[in-house]
Length: 110
Image (cartoon, rainbow, N blue to C red; front, side):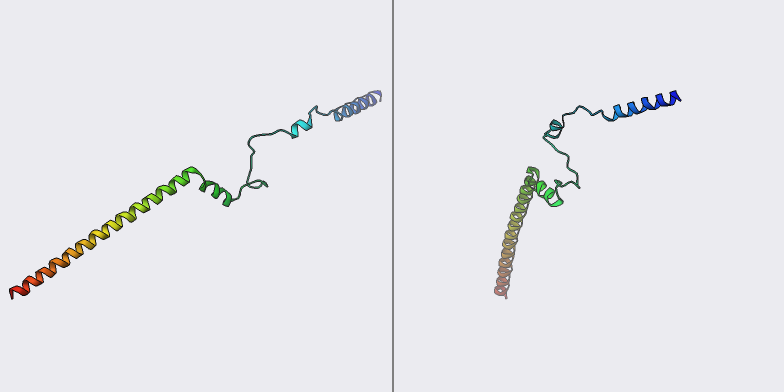
């Protein structure tokens, strides 16, 4: 009986001693830690939406350069097509003149 009481007292002292232990951590410093980057997942309040992410990508230098390159290519295509149209018009005019001159020579021969 003495052993059971002695074991109960020791067990109660251990549980009381263990439960009162608190880690020695300065919570004020722990809460004020500052990082230069933060992890943001898609469910957090600071997460960026799809539209904002698209705007960020569109404002990047690489995207802007690709837009400028595409604009240059379009202008070059317009210039080439305009040049081809002018050449085609000139050819059509010269063919008209040749046909007209052939008709006049045929009329003279008759």
